[in-house]
Amino acid sequence: MLQPPFAQEPPFSHGQTPRTAVLFCNLGTPDAPTASALRRYLGEFLSDHRVVEIPRLVWMLILHGIILRIRPAKSALKYASIWTAEGSPLKVWTERQAQALDAAFAKRDEQVSVRYAMRYGNPSMASQLDALKTEGFTRVLVMPAYPQYSGTTTASVFDAVYTWGQRTRLLPEFRFINHYHDHPAYIASLAQQVRAHWAEHGQGERLVMSFHGVPERTLHLGDPYHCECYKTARLLGEALGLNKSQYIVTFQSRFGKAKWLEPYTEPTLVALAEQGVKKVDLICPGFTSDCLETLEEIAQEAQEAFMHAGGEQFHYIPCLNDNPDWIEAMHAIASVHLAGWPLGAPDAQALTTSRNEAISRGGV
Image (cartoon, rainbow, N blue to C red; front, top):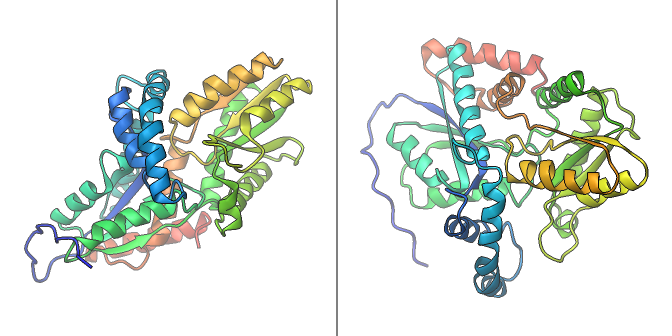
């Protein structure tokens, strides 16, 4: 079996001082809201065997023969409806989160640099890992933007790291965060986001918690995503003092004809309106950054469906984005996984203090 060629690397330096980085990884976004940019992005995204578990030859024929001929133009219109002067909302928020987390480490005099990368699109994970290696980083904590673990998302991020490692001679030391769906600081930041919304707009009759969907078969094959979504929802409901009749868990973004995790978000909203529920609030706890799936699919399409079915008030509660509570939660989560990595003599005590703070906020 042929091995991939090793990339050109900086020369090894004896006695190199260990340097630590956090690579914060989100799903990705097209470079522009155009059909050509969407074709490139969707081609990469939908070619991932983690995302579509169909025999590859069959799927490639469908992908290149049908989907990439039809879907890019339609998706481009959707992206155009939420595009900002700064670019894709997902990229804007992910970059701000990385910058804010970097500042949170610096505020504590912790020598940890934070970069962000996209699993699909730019900046790619490979390019960011190349840059970190060139700059002399010897330890990298990979932190996915997905609180709930799924083979379709989290595992795919890890795949990208392993693929990069196959062409790298001197690998950094890696650590991976699998999930933080039940971390107290994450739950607390979600709860505060909801409370702030209620303080300004009042509380709806139902709180709908919409998570990204995945095919139901992944649950039966051992993927923990479904269970972790429900645990997040239960903990958030408890933090808000809600009983089980006051909130509903749903799943959105179904693709294709296979059965996905149920109940589906939009049909549930329609049913609520038809049952006489006039005011709902909706939050997407599994998305840490606002993106197409929250701003267009939920705040536009799902709202329209609810109102058309007889609802009167639909309030979308934004994602955590760069909320200061979420940035502190990110720091708490990362600090637990950084424990034990030497950051240089001046920083050893700082990391110990940070780890103790993280544990006091719910880390383990």
